[in-house]
Amino acid sequence: MDRPQRRLYHLNRSVHDAERFAELLALEQDWVVRAAARIERDGPLPASHRAFVGALTDLLRAEEAAGYSENERYLARDATLEQFKVVVAEFAVDGLVESQSHLAIIPRLPARARMAVFRVLVDEFGCGNDEQEHAALYRKLVAELDMPTDVTHYADRADEPSLAYVNLFHWLAARAPVPEYFLGAYAYFESSVLYAYRSYAEATERLRVTNRQYYTEHLYIDTFHSRQMRAALRALAAERPVDFGKAWTGVLLTSTVVAEATDNAIAKARRAA
Figure 1 (tube, rainbow, N blue to C red):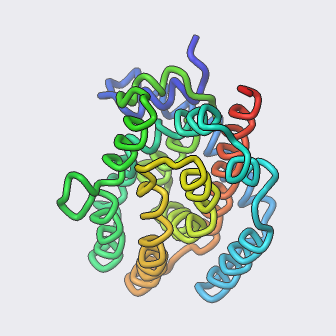
Figure 2 (figure 1 turned 180 degrees about the horizontal axis):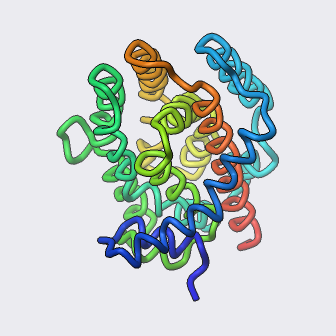
């Protein structure tokens, strides 16, 4: 039997009949729906835009000030090329299809909020330039490392935390009860990447990986993206009352899932030594 996250990953990338969709919902219920409910039960949750922005700013500052974790430091400064390839393989389930899971949020948003998110997605898909699509940048990276470029190769081998990294955004965009979950999560993610990808960029430079643009592009463009996501929340608030508690739940879900995926991938690489 498939592990839950691997099964969910394949279901998220398949055409659903009633039976498959029921299976997908059950897997999400047992995982992310329960996790979201636990966050909202335990609180505290911000009740206003000002409180949300303050809590998000504090979280981002604390994470950035903490610097590299032990695993991130190892990746940046000590990992061999073969160990780096293990990390690249773990995140290929996302990198090779980057942002495809986000598209379902677009019809769920009013016009101004939708356009703010869409500006970010346009960048993710290369602004019409096939060579600059983020998934294409990842393909160039894995090709340089003499690794397969077919995402199914990695989906059948990736660990559960890496698959959860992608599955979370499928739920946030398509099936979370309100779009606030996605907007909070994406506001956090686009801001946190500005420091979270530094260890990857440092590793590629040290290891003389030529196709490092996938990492360096995120360090550059995501300053703009983080502003757009905060603008999307403001635009939604101008249309209707916003549940900032659910936006904060999206933040905490994403922070936890990304941290677990990162630590697991690098730990797996270290064991490969």
